[in-house]
Image 1 (tube, rainbow, N blue to C red):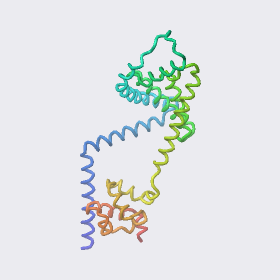
Image 2: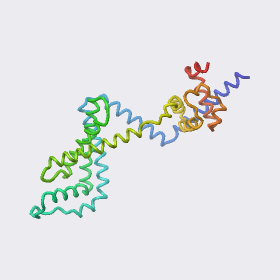
Image 3: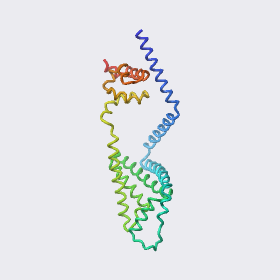
Image 4: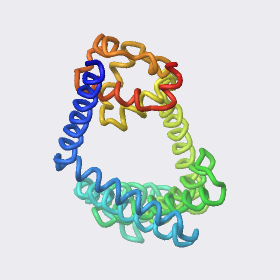
Length: 268
């Protein structure tokens, strides 16, 4: 009777697992996301095998296309504003500083084509330099990010006309430094917030197990019940029921723990 009960529980766990997998595969949104992830992974794997010039060229081109699309979209909103900054004739008698300020205003308020060009150069140069720095230095850190931002800021200043004025070189360097400081600050902020909380380290095995079963949504239940990785070998049906995990997922979780050699060894 006990053996039959175990076989019945195992069969029900297998049926529940198949049902969950079928429900996921039949979802068109899930299928589309999976297909996109496969294409993205394949493209990155192919790109990693290429030489540095090829990788940098492909990354620069794709990022430029994305930047052009974003700039063109933004330009549709600033197209009307650009007409408020007409270009004065050469003999208008404006001093160099006033002319430089006017050129900067026109650069920031250009139409779709102007903004598409500006953003294509900015994002393409940034991505290209980042790619080269990552290959050469073997890592992507704040220094690489700031160097890439300096290059993209300098090029943006040149193509957009913001680097005009009596001292163009100084304007270009100033723009590059400004971009580098902003990018460095954003990188540090993102790095700080991207670090997982200390408590998440206690649920690495749990998270991996739930993900393999398609039960990621129940991670919060484990955390509420303080069922850390150390408690996995001790889990029982009643413990999982106490954290409000339904019968089907409970069977899948217990079955996985029972089949895991490392956890079975720990149980003994």
